[in-house]
Image 1 (spheres, rainbow, N blue to C red):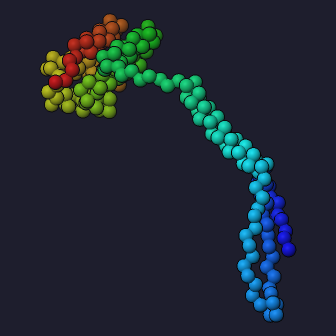
Image 2: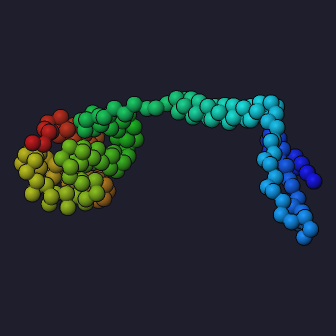
Image 3: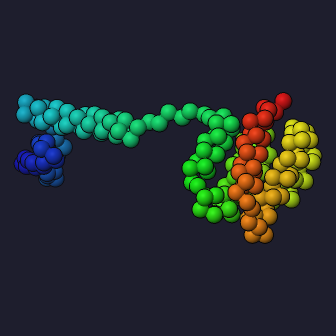
Length: 195
C-alpha cells in the first residue's frame, strides 16, 4: 500500500512516498528486499526551486545595494586632521563671534579663553592641562622643559588673572579682557613644536 503526502513549503512541492510495513506471516517466511522506487522528478518542481533560489539571491542583492546607498546618503565624511594652531585659531574666532565682552559676560569669556589655551597646550605638548587646576598646572609647568621661561611666566600671569575673573568675580575692563585675548593669541602664535 502506498500513500503520498503532499507538503508545500514556500511553493515547493515534495512528493514523498510512504510505505507501511506489513509483518509477514510465519508461512510466508522472509521475502527478498523490495526494489528501489523511482520518484518522478517533475519539471515544475525544478522551476519552483530555481525561482526560490533566485528570490533569495535578489533579496540578498537588494539588501547590499540598500546598505551601500544608505552609507553614501549619510555621507562618509573625510576626516581632515587640523593642527593644534588651526584648532586654536578657529576656537578664538568663535569666541570673538559670541561677543561675550560686549554683553558683559566676562566669566564666560575667560572660561572659554582659558579652555582654548589649555586644550592647545594639551594637543601640542601632551600635558593634561584641561584636567588640572591652575595650581597643579603651574606646578607642572615649572618642571616642564618644553616651554621657555618667558612662556611659563606669561601663562602664569594669564591664568592667575583669568582665575580672579572666574572665581573671585573680579570685573575686568574691556581693555584688560582684550589684552588677555591678545596674550592668548600671541602665546599660540609663538609656540613651537616640541623637540
